[in-house]
Image 1 (cartoon, rainbow over the protein chains, first blue to last red):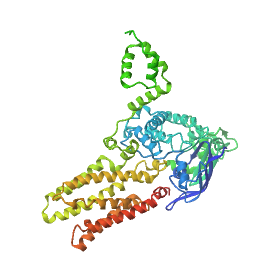
Image 2 (image 1 turned 60 degrees about the horizontal axis):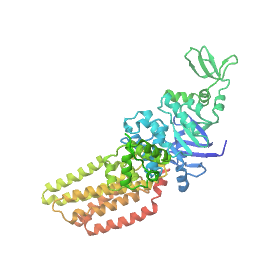
Image 3 (image 1 turned 180 degrees about the horizontal axis):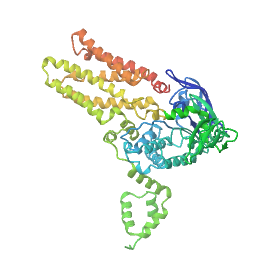
Image 4 (image 1 turned 120 degrees about the vertical axis):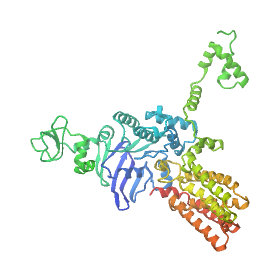
Length: 288
Length: 278
């Protein structure tokens, strides 16, 4: 791994009586790092800290080798940061162009022509050039997420912090997103959170699995997949030793857990590794 | 159509460089419309940068969405283009807010004009108290979490929060003062007291901004508003003069509030930013 661009040491955060992060530590370097975990795992809290929007109660955080707690350094980070919040708000009467233009001004782009060129460039990147003159309130949910993504790309930042960028995108848009993000990561850092294990498998060089405000796993997607090596098998029925089991389209049961010695083992996916790590808990939350 | 003469190379070169005066340039352009050969020469001798620049300007002119009424007004008032865009996103600079302000004051003016002489002073008191509070309300909803929908994106951007807030507060103050001036002109028996809301309005606004370095804008505004209403009422009761808060002593007190608040704001304005990242 090259020199880390984001360093997190024993970071803690509480909101009232709720503990959001209880001693999180990991480093992220150039490339794409994915945060995976169920709702309430602390992903958003952590991303907001990296985006300099939230300060930790305790612990140390360095972003692009600066300390976000120090005013001057925080400004330096913000000048090289692109951030897409989980629920980006919009001035709904703005058009897509006006909204991205507005954010460009907040990003200190005051010269009109250059700024407008940049706004058109990022709207083009997310495939919204045709609807740039349409009001945000008239755009679909997926289009709005792409507007939010476009503003994060303004100025080609060194660090992109994206909170669930693929939520609400249809499969084709998700593929376009993958193309877009993977195109620009040779020397840049992208940190994204997602519920989609396919996104992580397809995009990320590193994956962090979070649960209950702690890091449960840190490694490559391949290593996460390997967690389920020898622990996924097909059977006619739900197997006794299976922690999770479901009937697949062809009628066989896909079992995940402690396989019997004569099990018909199959190659695990990253999702299997993730499910085994997070266990029944993720399932219970998804069902809820 | 063919022409019998062609433009001199030096003239064409000067035209491409932008070095011809308007008369000679338009004369040449009239010729270019009818002469393929000269047009070709201009096309081949024009640099790619110049073409890109012109094309970029055309795209920018065509592509830029039309501006809202408020934004056009701001540009007419010579507000820089990028500031105008920041201001139109202010909830308390929307047309609906401005209309609401005008209506509130309009009703007060109508009441003042329709009331008996005995009650006139009471209506004037209410008008002055409310007029001083309008910019405070506007500042309270100018910028902040839960108020500005793009707050989170704005916080993560390099523009300092205090700068954005102060820009918006200045615009809010200017707009509500303008509206109030018009309303005050329509008050019956117009005299100097009709302008007595101005210093209190300034004082309360600056006090709200200063207090906002400790607490959220809405809390700051509510505290300032409550203190103001109670003080104005207390002054009226204790002196048997309903307009006591607006007499010279009150005005001096407002000046003092402005001075203290401005000092606090100068000293603490950067804390807006730090207070956010909690």
